[in-house]
Image (cartoon, rainbow, N blue to C red):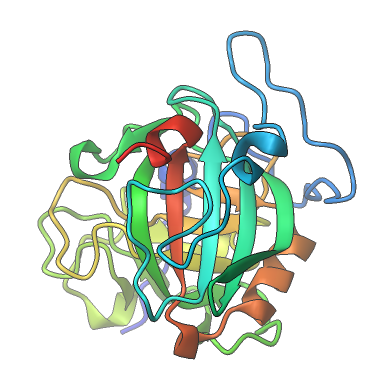
Length: 268
């Protein structure tokens, strides 16, 4: 039986989505152009790190430039590195890096947005905290309201049936699931993915708290299309840049993302 979203649930749902932080874009709002300079942080926040923040550390076969806290797996030749100047800012920098032998090359460098409450260590994060998890996570699949942009990653075009389960009592917590399959409470805090316009036009799943999900630690953490500002815990970038990332990613190269404050990532 097809289960449809009850209209009265939609305003509540929009408050819980990763893509809809307190200043996220309303439906139909265009993402800012990637050619524009990074948006300056509001008073009290730290702006995007300067370009010199990572280049001061020479590349090494042992890991990503500037990252000593995590040892990137030997098989992982593609890394999305997301760095910020501190824990409380919602402004960040995303770099797409690829390794050829012992040399890392930057193929994309763009301003990004984080959760409205900044960053939190992944193991300590709590669902609903509006913080982006800091750590290293595999990248294994993607989805979107729009057609596959040409990625080699497994890609699902979502419709009204597709939900991301945020129900902590469900055995399917932090999984994509069809409403008709059941097994979770339809409605908040689960997300009906097709309703997030434009944030989920395209989205890359960040495997935080997956596959062995801890109930209450958090669900639905993605790299998705920008709204108008901070997210509720995801990472967002302009749509054209996200499409470029999706076309670049290759599951055979075991891609991962590394997220955190620059100083924290550079400390062992």
